[in-house]
Picture (tube, rainbow, N blue to C red):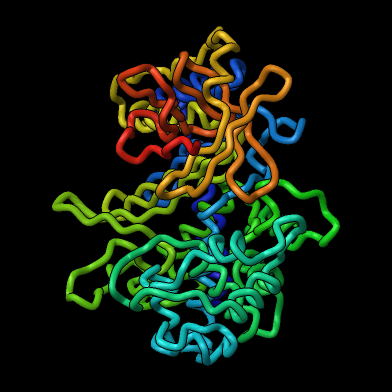
Length: 435
């Protein structure tokens, strides 16, 4: 009976309130439709108030198909919130404890002082496995999760002190997924489907088959090292997931409180990252959220706990405008004035400048970057990853990626010679051009 009542409550919350009482709904739909027609927005937007969906729609295209509310889209790092949920389920089943050392479940991993909770809180101090994969892995073929872990076990890269500081690192959640698999005896996808997605009615959520690619798959800069979970979902399914946390339909209120709590660091201060959630506490209230970012993808899942509101936004192949579009959504929802994104105009650069820009640049955070010219276009390739991305000019010295909200800049010295390359407006962190 209890489960039946929980199911009935879930059904009722998905009945949208009439849009006639909310004139901003028509405004927002019109704006997003216009942006989609102009190629500036592809994705889904869902807004909810007090457990009721008040706006939910899809716009544009993904993989040559029109996006509807039931079109699964990549969620990128929002998957961390779901992975943490899986760990919480194992905790309530009595199969793990947050204070356990991870070597109890992953005995070959060379980080004996790290606990499960420190992985969840991203305070483990473990290194980013991408660096190890670049230095010691075979970048001419795909590395799946098992091969990455084998490499880490063999190379044993040095780690920082566990619990010392927050460091956002995909490797923490790669290990969380491995713990789920080792403890449950199920694949990550099967576990999530059985314990999370099916119970919550997340019928359009699944893992991408490309997470563990075959060794002979085509290599590019995105897939040779594959630390992500590859989850695809919809804004509606993510709302179901968020509501389950707030209504305690699958796990207890105590577990949710732990997930939404700021953890203590070794020095007694608190971090702002719980169990797969960023946490914002102000005098006006408390919010939690997670965001994702990838090649042509940017995602938002925000729970305004005090206001009892939820925002979900999934975008694909329109990330050059996504931050501006997000702000438009927030402004229209709040009844504030808004400013539409401005379309990036193609800049007619003199191709002769490309000769000055070609070369290698050693950056402090991104390593060695190679800039080359092919068929009249400028390309960027990080070393030693195969694959490259076109640098599209926005001025004589600035460039952007077509499907990412990143801008780059070439820097010159007082004599006009190109000396560096890096993020736009960040000369102090530019990479120096190598002779």
